Image (tube, rainbow, N blue to C red; front, side, top):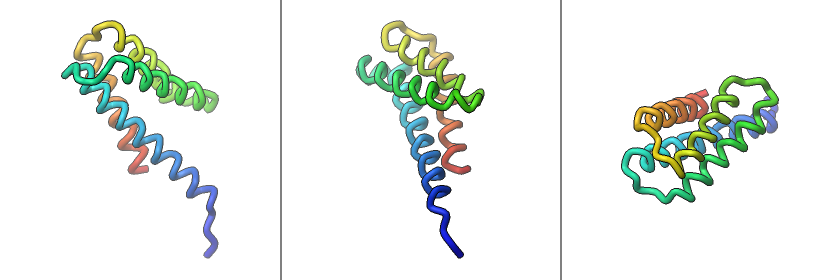
Length: 104
């Protein structure tokens, strides 16, 4: 049986991006609900999510479009107080997307 290294690389990239989604979700939740993390850190995380969405939007995936929207909202939340339900919705979306990436 031969190993297909390119498929393992793809699987590892998906899992790493899933971990990144979970990390951003938890950080944004802590920032939005507990006001614990610095605004600049959240701005950087929003920018990272925005770049990740733009890179993968070429595949015409709806989740990449939602990533772009979430990245913009997270970046805006670093300057403007977001309603708590928006923070929870964004965090839950990123959390479930990250978990599905890890399980898939």
